[in-house]
Amino acid sequence: MNTEENKWVRVCDKSILLPDTGLCALVGKEQVAIFRDRISDNIYAISNFDPIGEANVLSRGLIGSIDDKPVVSSPLYKQHFDLKTGECFEQPGLRLKTYVVSILEDQIHIRYEQ
Image (cartoon, rainbow, N blue to C red; front, side, top):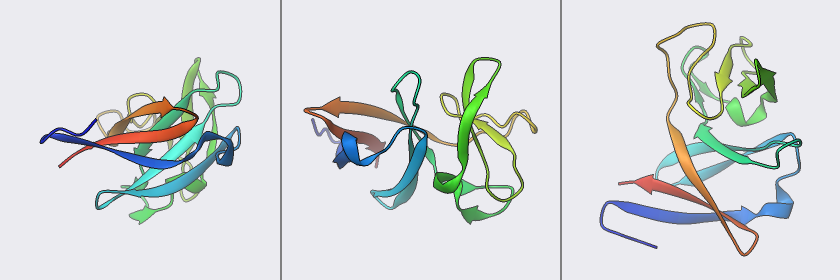
């Protein structure tokens, strides 16, 4: 799965990530917030860094939806970030980095670019 441009990192067993919760993982040198949606069972990965609160806290945020879009609410100032695109609902144009997720044999893998 490794190429010179991209690497896959095994994060954890899918069962460790409980529905409607998040966790933080170090992927390369970046903190990544990983979430599991209870309804769809989809796994999402975004930067853990909240650019408004200037802290690595998004994995502790609450997940939900706005207009059928999965979101996480920052635990600091409550901005909502789209889990698919990273876009901030309250500040259009502000966008978090998102990561590609793969599930292989019930293991969560995150792809990152070097």
